[in-house]
Amino acid sequence: MEVRKVLLTEDEMPRQWYNILADIKMNPPLGPDGNPVGPDALAPVFPMNLIEQEVSPERWIDIPEEVLNVLTIWRPSPLVRALSLEKALDTPARIYFKNEGVSPPGSHKPNTAVPQAYYNKVFGIEKLTTETGAGQWGSALSFACSQFGIECKVFMVRISFDQKPYRKSMMETWGGQCIASPSTETKAGRDVLERDPETPGSLGIAISEAIEAAVTDETGKTRYSLGSVLNHVMLHQTIVGLEAKKQLDKIGEYPDIVIACAGGGSNFAGIAYPFVLDKINGKEIDIYPVEPAACPTLTRAPFVYDHGDTARYTPLLPMYSLGHAFVPPPVHAGGLRYHGMSPTVSQLAAEGIIEPRTATQLDAMKAGMVFARTEGMISAPETNHALACIIDEAQKAKEEGKEKVILANWSGHGLIDLVAYDKYFAGELQNFALTDEELSASQKVFENFPKPELLKSR
Ligand SMILES: *Cc1c(COP(=O)(O)O)cnc(C)c1O
Image 1 (cartoon, rainbow, N blue to C red):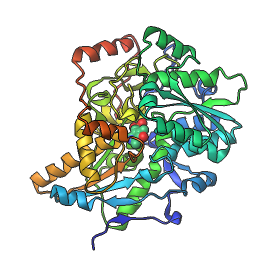
Image 2: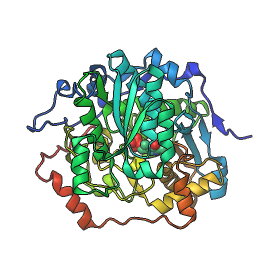
Image 3: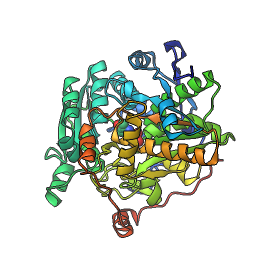
């Protein structure tokens, strides 16, 4: 019998996260005056212990015991070999995926929600505000806050709020509060509604609302929490890749290709960064973040300084950006509808260490169907983008007659996203083609900002 899945015991779980800041060169975030922002400027938004992690140069950072105790509810997660998919594709490639759908909310996101809730609790914070796209992050943070006894308020992007009502039910089950964004509760929300009352919303707008709600709270015991993009989020997710490396090691495998879908970049960073470290140290390995063709940040936007949110509350971050006011077309992969990209993922792409890919909404859904009818699992629409790339690579391996080892992050299940599948069956899903004119119009917003330097880490 061939190995179908590789499990680790709780004792074998990584005890430290990998911090890529130790191994790459970065442009600093800039304040409104164009000067680098120091850690203190972030203090109204995040607790100091997380800000320290955000800027830490240490390569390895200990995972607190209290965090491990919650993560073991579902971790270590299984590494599964997609034998049935391989067979259906008749490919010589061996395909392994890390199943992050086994967490209580059903995705990779609690890997950072849990440590973030923990560090806020330790710092004396009583309430967290956040945004959510498809609802995965909002439900992950609600779950994590319930584990540590803090309140959680979630601004959910309007289109997903309407498309995916059960995510709100999950948040409320864990004691969180969920409202549609843009809302009338914040100035950022009211401004957008005034300009465009019918807006589907965007992650950029919801981030502005959540930051505003945190910093204007008079108790001083509310902070904001972000589910992707930032350095400390990438850090927390590396437990995925570190586990995967141990699991592959157990069966004498090492990947030729690493694949994950990328919205803000944390799911990708989680599986990829431990292998990026190997690549920086000389290993030959192809590393592909996959984004939706309808929100082509890494593939059709420039590497610039831009704000992480629509109302321009965040510092200027060095990243690929479609423009902070860009409202992506309403694809079902709500978790991938973000105008920017994690600065560390952006730096790696700018240096060519990782090579971004895209998938259209229909190709992604088609890949999700193939996966469901072979491996059995119904994937989140976001995850389907990675599956489209896996299938492409497996077919390429067949054409070339090469036994490639493909490692992918299966970022979440789609059991709360079945409306996307319904629409696919009904022929109601479409691809969205963005013209160069549309893209260059949305990019005017950062024309006059400073430009990041092209730094070389290797
Ligand atoms: C949020 C989400 C993503 C995208 O996450 P990033 O870390 O921001 O790139 C991918 N897959 C699923 C299932 C998600 O919920």
